[in-house]
Length: 417
Image (cartoon, rainbow, N blue to C red; front, side, top):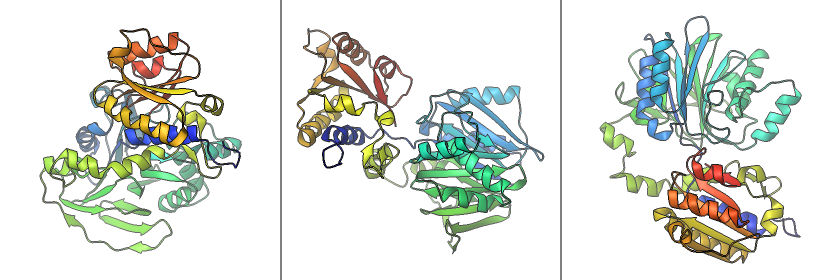
């Protein structure tokens, strides 16, 4: 922090660099169904169409008429399919999720859905005030089973249900204390005929069928079942039953909206109506930057959350140089990161192809921050350069899309959204 109480330049720069690389935390998939059919096949089919949104883990929660049954697995969706063959689930309604881990490493306990007090929740997004909310819940005697921010929502809703509120009201009251981006779908053991969903800064759509209702994070997940869609807007909550949907704002004001008929085919739907994926991703950049920043800034103190960035204040203040290491398109993104570092902090910065660093004897050491950038986290030349930098005493920060990949494991710090 600067003398006037504003963030230090080094802190701000770290966020600028991460944002420009678009390392995003809300790329997970939600699908839900309520109706007369046993829903597992529908959920799995929807998750398969959403698997591009996340494949660290997957899971489903199904109401069997008495209880909510949950099955989760680590890895790609095929692992969940195999688990469901061994332990079949039957019933409706149901919710499913495919995860791209942000808070909490990929594991079965961190996989969605999360359950607390007869409430099952799936969630996309980032709860920005999750640390404060978790502290409050722990002080009230709540025990957490996972490392995720999503489990907080399950406990908040369960607390409101225990206080006598119905599921819709309970979710509305729970979200009133939540800051951040979210798309959530929630079921209750005691209300086996409905799903309640809500959205803020994370996509969520409703599909209207014949005596059945669907929800999903993207249209392609439910397009085979209906072309009649309602798009939730920011700050809205919806009650889904087999016979219809009721939409209102989080403040309780009713919303009337006519469904849209989707005329795109499946391939066009995946592109969000854009001509091609590149154009779609160009238009998604503002949201990607905003999502990347979520949960990493304490807005009350106007400072970064050090545990989320991987570089503490002492290290940031002692930096003498920032050194980007990358290959391919990551290298070109890093060139821009270098300019941001120098423009905003005055800290000397350089950028080098990792494959070239490993064939010479670089001058690296204490006071140098090495930023290793790799989409996969497994780029062999970048990994070798990271090891060489560590041997010379430099601190390494990894920027990657895969939390448990080789480069973050080798780095002293890692950042993943």
